[in-house]
Image: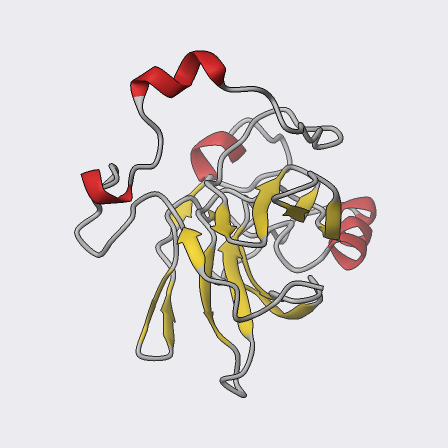
Length: 193
């Protein structure tokens, strides 16, 4: 389990509200002279990973990272997996950390290529909720196998919306920017005009 009180060292694409992407001088603990003395402490292989799209959340305890096959919490000291939340589609947004409903825990928010936004418990990796969002229209002229796939793999499969922009949590409300994958869907022969 992750400790919800573990201080956050890095979250998302930027370090602050101004979208700064570099650490301030007083935050840097590594000098140029230290680089030749660095040694690999551990490595972690994300099974089936083809491309990385989401920056990790780094706390004093763990690195939480989205991958093609799921969301992982990795111990910063040992490189061992603390928990894994399997997903059926690729995480395409940055990860956002926010308080849970009780105020005692944390949730990790993120979006996937199929237009599904997730809220996952920080401590355990358990899905608290997930919701397909977007344009609201679905593919209607489909075969039975495609409908069966939707029932099996979740609400986002036929959603023309994909999520690539990082959600933003402000005053308890999650804002989720939307993108469209309809340009890529145009090559699917059962896709209506």
